[in-house]
Length: 310
Ligand code: PYC
Image (cartoon, rainbow, N blue to C red; front, top):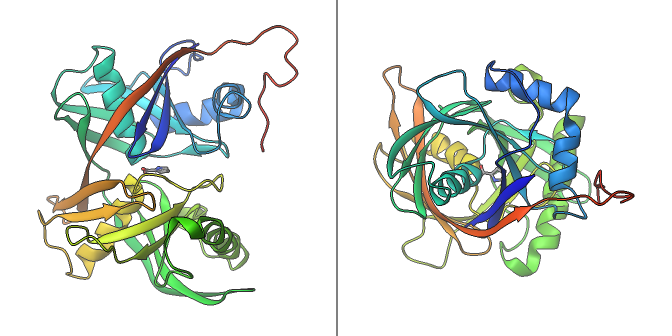
């Protein structure tokens, strides 16, 4: 199975470009269901240890039923599947450019969360116009043992996020273990307290914010992903959720830039427009670089060919 590895602001993406199962030609969300139900071994065999690491996001190239789309994609990680992935879409566009399958310019990409538009600006720089993003609940409070009262916002940016009002410790690389511990406790606490996204969806990403010391950066974040790895990039869907909240509060105007820095110092430049119905459509610009063009193989008798959860 051939895969192209890239990283977007430090966060890796593995695009599986061949050897996947036939998922039919239905909507991407139906193809995702089929992949999860009948072919989860593809996720396990390509993304789990020992062939891969917990922070990697996999991206299976699929056929979109919409002939206007340049590609369809299903994202997955060590815990399951993602409706959309901002850093992964940037990685996918750069990967398709590397393969000579995507010229510079504007293209549609189909995802289980909806169709997004990518603008391939150079072989490494990409803007993603994301799905409509919005705040579902404001001022949500919950008690977390060992942490205390936590307040925040539930918002959608292509995935569900809890955006905490306060960061529990200094948002620095030294504190990644503590940030991970508190964010994991909040993720569990949301389920225990019956706090969900729309239609009972689990809120599987938790995001903390702090100000940056850099004058040209608006905010620095830490994002816990569903499999408890943290996002090395500023998280495209998390930045979209944040932008939707800023837009709804009148703190960011259409077209105004929001520079989001990740915990490792990489950046996305975000902005938004409103569509004809007034929905917030965020755009995220970032860069990805190819780091591997690999063949994933399995030798007969490998006891860990199916991968394992660490
Ligand atoms: O960039 O949207 C994103 C993302 C989600 C999970 C990891 N990265």
